[in-house]
Length: 510
Image (cartoon, rainbow, N blue to C red; front, top):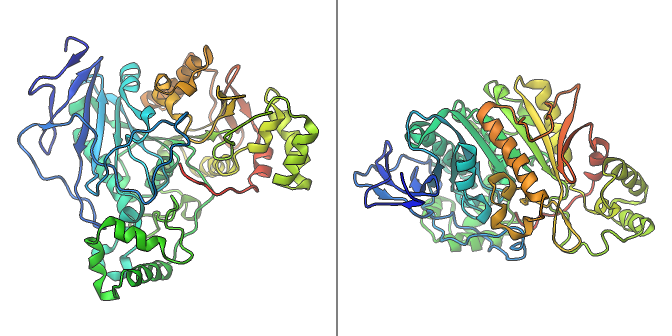
C-alpha cells in the first residue's frame, strides 16, 4: 500500500467468518474500528453476529457500554479521555495491524480496558490507541468493549435457567471476543496461537478471571496484569443476590413474577432504582462483578489455579502510588523529616510510622521522604502474595514489576493508577504531562519494549533493559522502572508493602 493514507471505496477489505470489513491504511498500519464480534439480549449469553455480505465500513469505534456514573474531568491532565456514544449494543472490537498478509503470523495483543467492572471502554483513554504499538512492535493490537455494571454482572440466576450465567455475562463477552480473534485474526496478519492479553486495573482483573474460566482455555497464551491484583473480593451468596434483585424489583414497583421486565426497562430507570437501595453502593466500580458458579471457578486464591492456567506465562505489577497520590504535592522536596513523621503517624498510626519511613528510605534512597505518605496500599502487596502462590502452584514463567517514576506536574507526581498506559502503548506524545526530556523516551522504550518482547517470545528481556529475572520462591525479583535508571531488585519493599497495606482507601474511580 503506497502513501501515508489510503482508503478506496472497497479497500482495504478483509473477509471475516461473518462478512467483509472495510478499514483504512494510515502511516504503515491497517486500522479497523467498530468491528462487531457478537450480539446479545440483556442479561443473556452473547451470540454470533448476523452474517452480512456487503463490506461493513469500520472507520470509527462502536458504542461503549452505558455507565451508571459520569466521567469526571479532574484527571484529564495526565489521563485524557475520549467521550464516545454509549449503547447496550456494545459488542465491538478494534484492530491495528502492520500487515494483512494471512501468512505473516504476527503476535496478537488483546487489551482489556480498566474501570473495574463498572465503566470504561477500549477507546475511553486517548493513550490506548494501537497504531504505534502495532507499527513499531510488529504486532496486531486488538481493543474491545463489553457489557459492564448491572448489564454485565447482575445475578438473576435465582429467577430461572434463562439467567443462569447473567452474573458473568460481561466476562462471557470477553470469551466470545477471544473466540472471534481465534477465528479471524489470521486474516489481519495475526497468529491465533500467540495471543497475549494485557489489561490495566479492571482489565487486569478480568485476565485473572479468565484464567479461572474453562471456556477461555486455549484462547490466549500469555497475560500482562497492570495494577489488577487486589485482596480477594467478597463473594456474594446466592441468597444475597436474590434479595438484591427482589429489592430492585420492589423499587420499580414490580413483583417476583415480573422479573423479565428488567430486560426491557430503560437503562436509566433501572440504574436509578439501584442507587436508591439502602446500603448498596450501586455506583461503585465493583458493585457488580463476576461470581463463582458452573461457568467461573472463582478467585484462584480460594479455588486454586486451573490446570491449564498453570502453563500461562504472566507479568504482574503496579505503580508506586496508585490511588493514594494527592492532587498537589507542594512541599514534596522541602518538608522536613519531623513533619513527615507527624503526618505519617496520623495516616499509619504512631507505632507503624517510624518503621514505614525507615523501610521506605532503605527501598527508595533517591526519593523524597514525603512519598512515603502516599504509597499504594491496594495492589502492591496482594500482587506479591499472588506471585508467591503462582510460583508455588504454576509451571509457567512469572515476572514482577513496579512503576516507580514521576510525571513532571508541579513538584513531581509519583506514578498514579493508569499513568503507565501511555508508556505501554507508546503514546506518551498524546499525553503532554508524561513528557520529561530524555527520561520519557527511555521509559517508553523499556516498558513497551518489554511488553512487546513478552508478546513475541514469552520473555520480557531485551537489549535496552537490564536483565529481568523471573519471580520465584527462591528469588523474588522485581523490575523497578524508574529514574535515573531502571533495574531489578530482589525482595524489594516486601516488608514495606506489608506495613502499608493496612492503610485502606475508598476508590473514587478508575
